[in-house]
Every structure is written in structure tokens, then in C-alpha cells.
Amino acid sequence: MLLSQLPEDLLYYILSYLDYRSLSRLSQVCRSLYRFVNRDAVWKKIAKDLLNTGITREGKDIYPLIRLKDRVKIAQNWYNGICRRIIPLRWKTKLLPWLQLDGDTLFLSQAADIKVYHIHKDSGRLQRSPYEVYSGHKGDVCRFVVTDSLLISGGSDGKIVVHSRRSDVPVEFSGHNQEVNCVDAKDGLIISGSRDRTARIWNLTSTAPRGTIPMHDRVWSVAINPTLSSFVTGTACCENFSPLRIWDAERSICLCALGSEFRRGAGVLDIRFESPFQLFTCGYDTFIRLWDLRLCPRKCAMEWEEPHDSALYCIQTDGNHMIASGSSYYGVVRLWDKRRTECLQFFQLSSDPVSSPVYCLRFNSSHLYAALATAVHSLDFRQNGTHIR
Image (cartoon, rainbow, N blue to C red; front, top):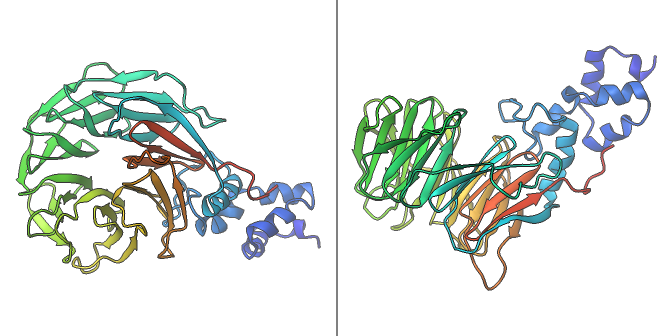
């Protein structure tokens, strides 16, 4: 009996023992095996062990429209740092930009506006001019978040502006009396944090806050738990309490504090939930930390230290093994494998003697976009580093 004549379930079982190189060679044997090996189900086990293939720890596929075999090829380039660097957008005035990715669309804040750029599917480049611009703030946009139907921004004017992505009429929420440093939104729930030392809870049904929490410190970051039952705040750590606290979203009470040994000034600049029980944080103390809410809240589950003692402005994870971080000096982007303590790859995006933090970074299956003071940088990992036919 030929290998291609075996029952499919038995063939799947046999192929599960092969690595990606062996699968690639097997696909060249004959047409029937080529068609079978190209199925996503054959590559799923391999993909789950690699970086940024779109397969999460729970087995969810984030990029179902892209062949898994192609993503496995690109994953080798993420691991080995093989990419092409491009600067698709530049501007003259130094800004503190923020960006978000939504499919083939990139949202970028520049001063008081949020500009929307189309990402070309084949090249990954941005179109030269934005096809839409969202305005409404009297000062600079500090942070914003994008949902399926809304764009919600916080600004240096103390306002929160809610834009519908389907109409041109923004709604202004007033409550903070200083700049809104951070904002997060999920399913109609909005959480904001401000330099005025408060966090505020909002619903889309009212332009006034539903609740106000005195924080007694400047709020740099917020993140809503995927269950919507709670949220986390990160403060400047200028007072004698933990900068990380978890709050009940309904009752506005503190559920617990995370950590116990933060040094003064070790503010938390970014928070990312990866599941209802796990979140990642980074900030001025140069560490990325993983917190597991099922364990003791006084100690993090894992941590990774920035080797050059730079503050970490932003992080993103692939939902599985990879973390990307943006540093405060020379536009340094680092890639981390959670299974290792040391940095896997790093890229210096700003040139000497000009130094800029990476204010924000986002990535998809093939590209990483980083916002610096005067430009957006792109790393294209679709290069010929690993040969998979």
C-alpha cells in the first residue's frame, strides 16, 4: 500500500511526527501528497510551537484566511530576525504617536488627528495619503482604541471623543480636568485614566462618567479584562503603594494589588490581557512581567528584563509564544520568546545621534509597525530566509 493510500486519520497521525522541513520534502513526492500536506490541519501542531503563526495557546486561529504553511515559513524569519526595513511614513515635527491595526487598515494619531491608512495586501506598504481623518480634540491625542464600529480617543484636552466608523458625528465625553493618558474599550464599556489622578468608568449611553475612582497618582495605562467584570490600572508609582491594581467594573472597588517590590518611579506604561487570567505589563522599571491572576498576586509568574536598562513603552503578544516590546532609546524593538529569559532579536530603528522611543508597536502575521517621534517604521518578515515549497 502506498503512503498516499492510507486512511486520512492515520496519515495525519504519521505526519504529526514530521518537522516542517520533512513535510516540505514530502509535499514534493507527488500531487496527491502535495495537496494533502498543504492542508492547514497538517501544519497546526508545528505552527503552535512557532512564533506568531496566528495559532494561540488555546488553539484559536487568528488569521484563518492565510495558509498555515505560509505562516510557518514566515515564522522562521520572525525567529531569526530576517526582515526588510521600510519607513512608509515620515513627518517633520516630533510627536507622541499611537497606532492600531485592524485587518488591512492602520490607524495613526498625529497631534490632534487620527489618520487612517490602507495597507496594500501584496507589499504591506501604506498608501501615501490617509483615506479618512478623525478629529475632535482641541489638543493632542494621547491614546485611542479601535473596535468593530467605534474609534475612542483620549486627549491632552481632558476629553474622550467617540467616533462612529460609519458616520461623521463624534460624541464628546467630559469628566477629566487634565490630559487623558490612556483609554480602553470593550462591548460598550470604556475605562479612562488621567494625569488628574483618577480613573473613570463610562457607558456609551451617557456622556458623563458612570463612576470615578480616586487613584492618588497619575494613571499611565488601563486594560479591561476580556470578561468585562474587572479592569487593571497602571500608575506612575510615585506613592507608597503598588502601581498595578485590579478593580471591579460594576462596584468600582479595588479587588487586589499586583506585586510588592516596585521601586519608586517605576510607572506602568502598557498593559495587555492575553486571557481572562493572564496579563502582561511593562514600564519604567525595564521589565516585562507576566501576571497569572489564579496565583499569588504579590509575585509575577514570569519576567523578562530589557538588557540595556531602558524603559519599555509598549508591548504586544501573539497570544502564544512571542512578545514584541518597544524601548525608550534609539527606537529599539525587541522580540522575545516566552520560553527563554533573554531577548531573541532586536532592531534599532532610529539612527545615531537621533534617539526616539518606540511609542507604540503593532504586528500581524507578516509585518511589524512601530511609531517613533517622526516616522512609522515597518519590518517586513516575508523574506526568503527559509525554503518551504
